[in-house]
Amino acid sequence: MKLIIIRHGDPDYEHDSLTQKGVREAQLLSDRISQLDVKAFYCSPLGRAQDTASYTLNKMNRTAETLPWLCEFEGKIVSGLKLVSCWDRLPSVWTKYPEHYDYDNWYKSKIMRYGTVERKYKNVCEGIDELLKKHGYEHDGRVYKVNNSNHDTIVLFCHFGVECVLLSHIFSCSPMVLWHNFVALPTSVTTLITEERERGIASFRCQQFGDISHLYKGGEEPAFAARFCECFDDDTRH
Image (cartoon, one colour):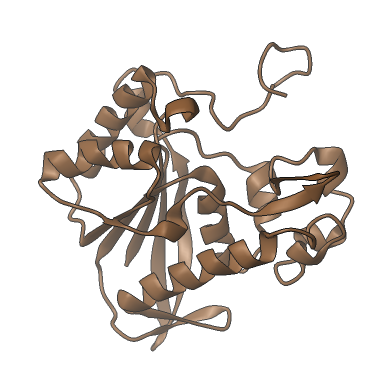
């Protein structure tokens, strides 16, 4: 089975929609995804993901099931007197904690344990487990029990933060490394494929991460959203 995870197009966060650049990206993406034989589409409830999906769905005359847990990851930590996002932490801060590299303990560190992180993380994990079980692959420890071996293609339209959570759970690794050392640009395509090397047992393998070849094919420069400044003196997000 192929599991394809797509980030939304260049976002207009103020209106939870797409910029004009994001619309062009979504149109180019639709040319790519509409060529696939897709068993089922699933989408985040947020507008920027819904808008991105709409170009592909309209072209294929299909619909997507909206799944609340595919919204952008909402885990918060306590910082002073307020709650802030648990990711996009500064490198000098998050790398100090060995637990952040540990799949079983990353949300138990001194800076992660207070807030909503563990509960929100487990909610997403339970969601993707239920979805994969529905499509024939049941999470069993660090591998998957094959209940229905298949060559189906499943497509998820969502967000970078929650994409990293999905990958961390499927691969049994900490999302902290994925959030902070990888980036999936707008409309990027990540493809996982099952491998059943032992009868009845499957694992997922990443064939592509953050692929934006459809943008290059269409002559569209990739958006900056989710990145930080390449050099400290650059006039871009720090």
